[in-house]
Amino acid sequence: MQQDLKNLISECWRGKISREEIISKIATNKSQQSALVRNIFDDIIVSKNSGEVEYWLTLLLIFEENDEFIDLVHQLILEPWHTQYENIAHNLQRRANVKSIPFIKKAMQNKYKHLESYGTGTRQFINQCGHALRQIGTKEAVDVIYELSNADDPVLKDEMLYRISRIEGRDDYERDHDL
Image (cartoon, rainbow, N blue to C red; front, side):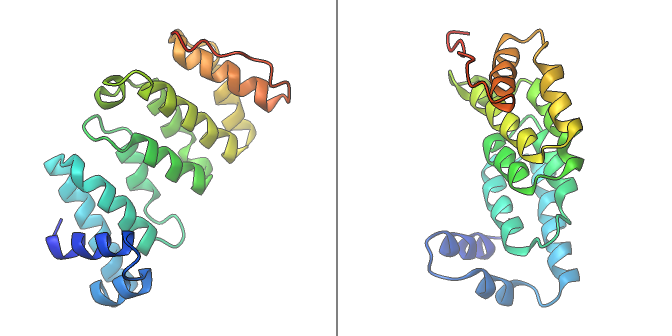
């Protein structure tokens, strides 16, 4: 990603410039904006530069209006080399788009090196994905939660049993944090 673009995004993070200012400095029309976002994504995928993913996710918040880049987010949540899994799960939760269900389901069943590298990483990610499915809220999304409550993976199973107790209004499931 170009350093000048990263600088603009950093300025936005610090509240020094607005989303509108970035848009006016970067691209003049929707077609250019879309091409920019997609080209940067392609470069990140090819280079597998984990440090650029957070900038790209911010770029989405700046330019995206109607989930037009959701396909890229779906691809990114399944990539095994970056560190932004929880941010992506939050992104998909915010979107609450039914198209995300199979990608969230698959991601929850994956083991990502970054998440596995610290004790609660995988559990936190699975929990956040459960929130995303619940936010989507369709029968299909809730069915995935029930299906994954029978998973062989003990952490996945534990988190989905907890999520079911919340869905059913019982709030009585005690998670086993020793898993």
